[in-house]
Length: 241
Length: 171
Image (cartoon, rainbow over all chains, first blue to last red; front, side):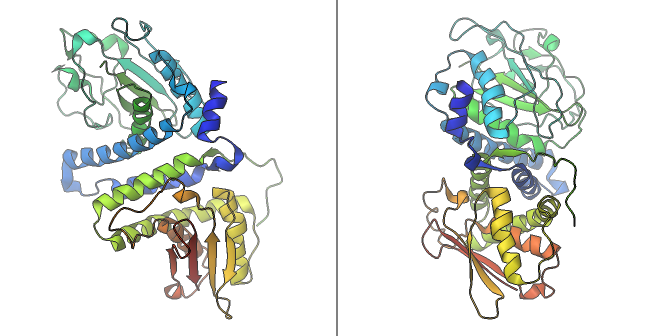
């Protein structure tokens, strides 16, 4: 029922469909046009380009989320929202569901108690990113606030460090067992992120997920990583308000 | 080119809103980056050209259209097959001169402007759908449709109001 509603409101009927290659080519050209080509721009320029792409995805995600029917917007549990993202939204937009959703199920409905959700997905055969990994920062370990600017998960860090503060987790792929740091607000240094596809191709989709979640009332930070093409894993860090 | 006799692969479809909204976000970003409408139009055309050069290969592989023998045939294929295949719409075609080398594609229901209420202030010269012009231009060049490409111009404009897009092109 929910899928049909979402489908109807997002226009999953025949007349509302377009060929996938059109969007893929448009996305490729967008990245080529907006990505910082100047080698002298450095990580700063590249991060700005990533933020631009992510911002565009965010606006599109918000607009897509606003087209949802009222009943689908009535979710109260985070897990329901995430399931909607993986099943209904992805199906309505890409005609496929995400492969799997994994959490570190200490989740409880809002607004009771601190919750922590981690999700990962299994590889898929689709060329478009499909995985979704969701991680919720434990409220003991840091404050909320709006998500920091998008940082690529694929730009290797030259100085791995044990970073204090919630912002250190930005753009990182965090294994669940590495969540606990030496103290409040600390996160362990991440494993080396091997950069397969370029991060600029993932930024838009991360923004799209973040924008849709924002419309559904969930503040989040979304990053992506690719271990083996064509599968992709998205990590969603839900920020407690 | 012959069509394969085995079962044709299913071509993936996506929600059209995703494409339309993404395009809108792109135009908005370009408007932020460039002050002049001419620059925005130029980059939209350039991006469309890049898309068209690749899209035509996909189109030829999937549509199995034969060789065209006239410009009007090409225009009809673009309107009735290509637009239909990719955007699900069929623009009407009119010929603008007796030499039959200038045509117009008229989109009564342009999906790209579905969520556009009005152009931003001070953007009266913006060709919102210039991407489509670039796509057609790129596709035609790749198929060597026109030997004299320097004579080929494609322009788009809102000749009959904000929601009717007219594209005229010359060979």
